[in-house]
Image 1: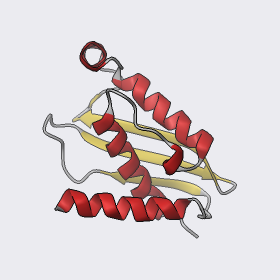
Image 2: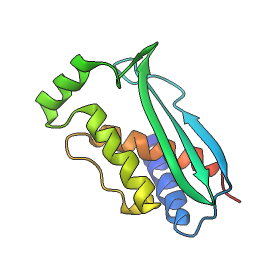
Image 3: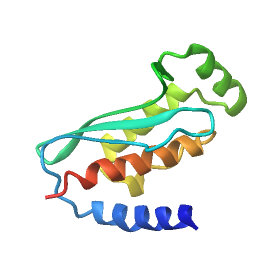
Length: 130
């Protein structure tokens, strides 16, 4: 039930982004608790001239970031067909290009990551609406 409510909120909120005017600045969001593997996701979004200019997404367990965890990336690529770092880079670049979460497809083999990314984008950008 909670997941459905969150999904509904995100859908309604994301639909509004097509008409949003974001104020310039850096906006961040972070998960309240770790996932089942102990990783906590966070995001920092830079808005410049009313548009998404830069996105920095990370998942870390303590000081261990998935960006620098070569073993994690290699294992994810072996199991799902895509490395975590490649999936995140694709999501970040896709959203900067499209400026619209509705136009951002989930990454095959990284659907949980894609959902976490979109949720945190929604939370961060909620702080930037004019």
